[in-house]
Amino acid sequence: MRLAFFGTPAYAVPTLDALAASEHEVVTVVAQPDRPSGRGKKMQSPPVVVRARELGIETRQPKGVRSGPFPKNYGALELDLAVVVAYGRILTAQLLNVPKHGCINGHGSLLPRWRGAGPIQWSLLSGDAQTGVCVMQMDEGMDTGDVLLREAIDIGENETQSELGERLSHLTAKLCLEAVNRYGQLTPEPQPADGITHARMLSKADAQMDWSRSAQELHNQVRGLNPWPGTQTTFRGEAFKIKVASVGEGGSDQAPGTVLFAGEHIAVSTGQGVLYIHSAQLPGKPARGARQLVNGARIAVGELFGG
Image (cartoon, rainbow, N blue to C red; front, side, top):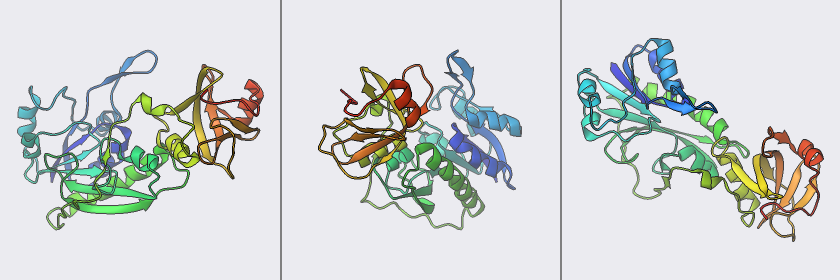
């Protein structure tokens, strides 16, 4: 089949690779425009564009998909199917109807749970035990289309956003290729009317920790927001970014945010339970393990985070 591929971040690259290595023809790759990145704010192409160029596939990076030259040019490609993975924009009905068989989307959740922009982060933030990938036939709604394939996986107790995303990206590639290979043989299944949740887009404001929450909730926040937007609190009036944490043993009657132990880990009281900090970052410093932080900053029992 003649395919178009829509995708932007690294998450979508394994699917592009799988399709490019198959018997199908990837006619064009559509991604979001280059963005300034790093301290120098140099323009940088998204990972999907970089990979497409390596593969010798034509790329398109329209500023918008609703107007301008893109809709007309895209409509002239004589496509059989479009595959969408983390493109980052909603496709219009006009674009959905360009390919002969429409568009399919590889989404990193067990729909209808976590429709929207951040399904991987929200599955971790909410402490879900399972997640997975659904490949759906796209319609005009936000992740509301009929599901063609789905596969569930268990989430590790301490798994982070980046680790889970890596696993799901390869599962997405597998299922999207299977959906393309078996297209026309699969039975679309409408999504259930119950169990719908929405994964809103995250912001830097979500990084702030509230020590009155439980240790489990804070642990989920740390792993769910790693690497972006990260998780931080304050310590001695400065930002303190927590990189790796876990749920500690026992409980405490100390005020939330109080340092209970400072050594190989930093134990901190919470609204319910104890959080162990294993790695963190002080302003202007690299991330360091708990022992280095304790020795370097002289962190002591009784000090307060978040105060």
